[in-house]
Length: 147
Image (tube, rainbow, N blue to C red; front, side, top):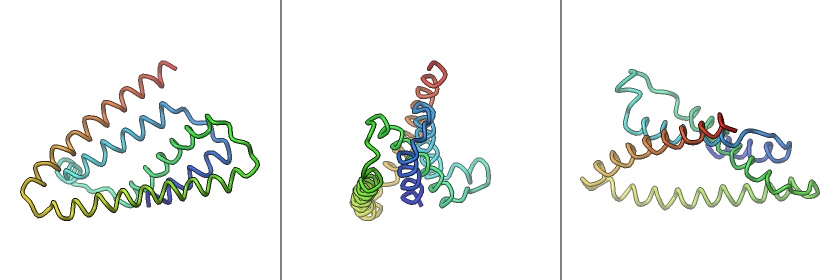
């Protein structure tokens, strides 16, 4: 779902020259990091007795992540000639890279889950994701409102 969302807004954002404030998009991306850390800790169930639809959330955040990359790529002022072909090739490369990285992470996590240290590490890591995501979101929103 992330790949679908990411690909749609990456391609359309650059190809259609969608202009979006980078501070605002980066704040939403930071929010997605905090959201996922909170979700990984079971925060929605624990505090709200509710679990958001993970597929929908991942798709929505993928849309914003792709738009963030599209916003950055637009700074290069690409020529329109061959742009779609180059964007598709770039996107395929990005998605393959993300898939390979995810594959390695999943292999390591699958093995590590068998050990007691995994639970403690994952809890600390998810708390750090929440803190970092909120801090980055605040930083980006300050830039948005000061721009």
